[in-house]
Length: 142
Image 1 (cartoon, rainbow, N blue to C red):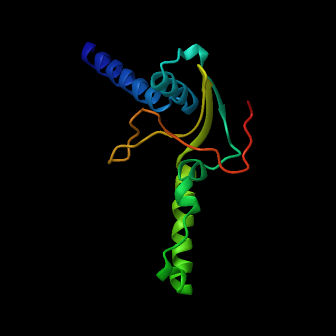
Image 2 (cartoon, rainbow, N blue to C red; image 1 turned 135 degrees about the vertical axis):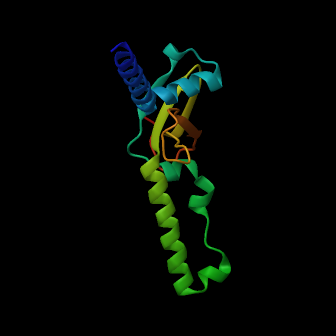
């Protein structure tokens, strides 16, 4: 009886740890990373979700501006395939990352954040944010 109770308790504890780790809000992870990276106390960091911006546009400024190689640009079929591939990459990135704007201690940044997964598909429980740039024409709310 004690062994079953102990096992049940261990399973519930493990399940709670997995759920609570996998559910770290992205905005909290972004604040914590900003705080660490810039030695800025957490209570001095502000964060806002930027649903008006696409993660691809924020993260890959140079790729966004890139034109297809000349040999592809001259071939209509290859150009269509190149564009389709670019859109698929962008859509996947935009589905996986959310954009946040953070400020504190004299700094202001735009980041794209997600929760990485292990090769077996399990969430790592961490939040990873990549610094980005403001796309042309985007407004800064602060």
